[in-house]
Image (cartoon, rainbow, N blue to C red; front, side, top):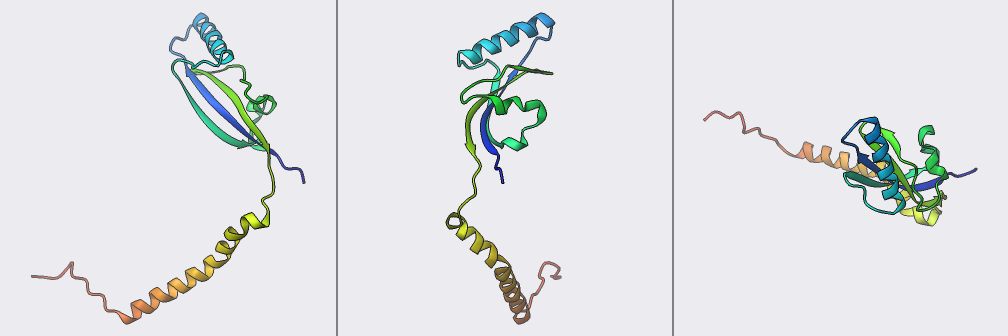
Length: 138
């Protein structure tokens, strides 16, 4: 069974304020220069994320082809540009049993714990008297 690569990337959105054709091209050039020089893009926000290589959409498939630390070409959006930078790639792996043992035990014990707790609550309810004082008349 072939396992997919896990990809770490930075997503940068650079917001464009002017929307004339010449300003869009100038801004794209500015974004590209900032990216190539490793500089911050004024008015941009960035988010680091991990994604399974198989989950990358067709329109963003270029991310899979980037080299580590390489930036993508700026992609135009309605309100600016988006740029991706590949931070890391790692092979997806199967987690060994020793690393998952506690999780498996907890998962197997959960139904029994829930049943015992429900039985305990039912027994407590049988042995007690509940008086609603909120509707008492004074």
